[in-house]
Length: 416
Image (tube, rainbow, N blue to C red):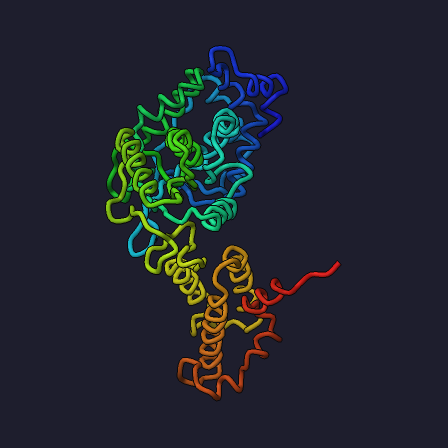
């Protein structure tokens, strides 16, 4: 919560309820120079690609003071108009996922609006929602799921909302916004962003549904639309854990899980969304083959595994940093690898421990192959002679982070 926006009087109203349940006069807080400056800092920190105007974050930064003053005046006088969203396809599994990239100026205004209105909706959101919320994250959601499984909630509805961000109905979404906000100019901003033209290569169209992934305001709007589902399932006593559009419902009996799926399907279809027919299922995660995947982990037969897609994605990133044509010194390559390996381990450190020796072995094989190439020796670096020439201790001395060692250190008893 930005305390330069949210005064003590506003905080009191947030806690006690505003007159008529709706918030008025918010747009002036959006175009305040201090709000726009904070919003610009958020956008600059996230970097990101340029939009349809070709202006990068770096180019904006060179004249940020002038550009922010222009945005302030345009918003104050009602002259601000968002530009089209540039659409690109990014890899996702075996296919791609559409990503919408607004211009830097539009991202700044969206960040300013988010700073103003997010506390209004956050105050109403329920604990079962974890994605894109202040002070919450993947690890919190995973702890909740793991705790429920350990407590006997082993019958799981593993649900997938098909193309959720692209299918949110605009009018139904705005109805939810208007339940709490009555500032017409701010509502016009949100409508303008939902109706932004989309440009992809030589094509251009105006969407009638959805909010683009990649827009600053989209995660908040997406959470707001599914808030109704959170309340619906909570009021019926179901233990649901949701991270954006990724959700699981955990139950103690099969019949309860099947009923939960029916409740979920009814709400989803009644609100203009769809469940993926092939990715939505009910199972007993204690049984082999009936586990479920959530936020990179697979829960099955009493264990937490790293799902295959997550491991493959890591291997692809390792391959990209250890190409045999790379001519850098080993120390530089290790320095490039270590932050990625540490971050991956930090997230998956609670997975089955047999995962980590496999990853460590893969990294060392890639490095041996690279060293063979640098020494003009053919082959992939798997022969016994290479292990003798470059043993595991060689890479340890070079400072290579190993997950096996990190796991062993974490497992040691602590004293004092």
